[in-house]
Length: 164
Image (tube, rainbow, N blue to C red; front, side, top):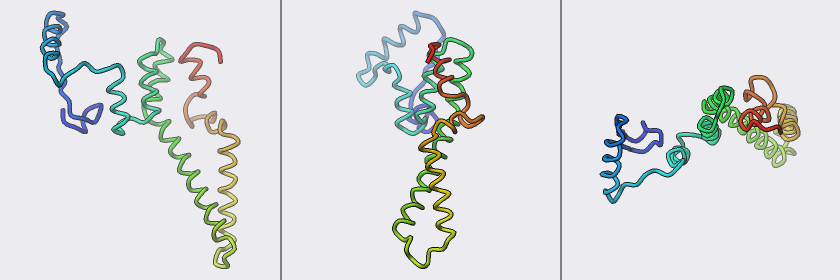
């Protein structure tokens, strides 16, 4: 498979064997004699996919949860994590914070300039409120319906089946 189309975003060769233990053993022992080949370590393909930008951290965590999940609820939560929606939501929040910080920096640097109108200060005040909401009430967007899916504590409880 060519780079860009594989799970890891790297070129690779996939072998599809039927379930005969004798054939599987023969193929693995033959491949093991080649000096450049070795068996993949646990999680290696996921790590390579993450490092190549194919998966973000929330998708990696969703994959881990899917592999380790024991119940249907855990499987559904893991699938939600693997869609990338959580990562996109966090990226949107990051962009809002960076934008608000840029406005605050501009007001600090150029706020006394006569060319700065009242609108800039109103926009800056709105940005300040947004940042305060994000900093002091970070759990609020996480709990709001449809923002990130289930509340993180609920997800952790379902994933581990332990009370938090």
